[in-house]
Picture (cartoon, rainbow, N blue to C red):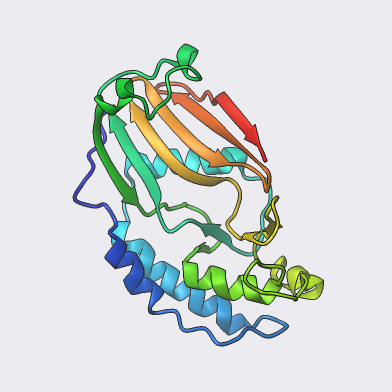
Length: 223
């Protein structure tokens, strides 16, 4: 399957431009409806920069809903997913031996870009901008640069009414995106390889052969 990359790749400048639109005061308990309305409005504006029904969005949606296990008031997605295309098959039997970053696949790489993920769903979609992450992490507490302040359990329960909230396995940080967090999708001649985190402490590499509904888990990890 051929996937065209390049013209629609999101740029760092575009992401930063949307970051600058989010002006956040110190969040106070309980979180206000206007906070989420502002976040949703800016997310909608950001989403239409790449608003299509391409194979990229089809694959992202299929993987996301296969592994998503919690429904809240909102889905929170990463601001972009890395897409790579290769002029070769992925050798699943030797996947653990032939690293994707090795020379075999590097010479077969035909394109790479960053794309805004989309979901077709009745639940509003928010994007995990770094300014939002910083503000919400301060609201929750327990972060590495927040010396001397413990996790605020009351604020955690407040935010969990709206989105998935998971404390990082190593401590000092939060996962605020909806699981699974899909980092990258690699399109080969015989299918798509997807890198994702499926929980606060685990992740998997999944292969979807073209022409099937299979999810082949090639590798997994645990923190």
